[in-house]
Image (tube, rainbow, N blue to C red; front, side):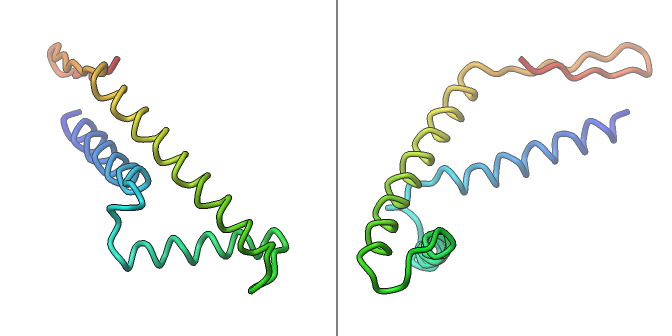
Length: 102
C-alpha cells in the first residue's frame, strides 16, 4: 500500500510540474520557450485559416497571445487558490493506508 501512495504522490508532483509550465507568465519564459509558444500560436492561426503574412494572421496572433496570457493567469490563480486551501491527511490502520485530500 505504501508503494501505491508513493506512486500517487509522484504522479501528483509530475502533474504540478506540468501545470506549472502552463502557468508561467510569458514574460518570464526563456527565449527558446517563447519561440516554441510563438510557433504553437501560429500553427493554431494557420489551422483556423489565417494565411502567413496576412493581416488575418497578425490579428489572429494578437488575439491568441491575449487568450494565452489570460488562460495562464487563470491557471496561476487557480493553483494559488488550491495551494492555500488544500490539505492531505494520511491515515494508517493496520495494513491499510488512506490518503485524503480536501
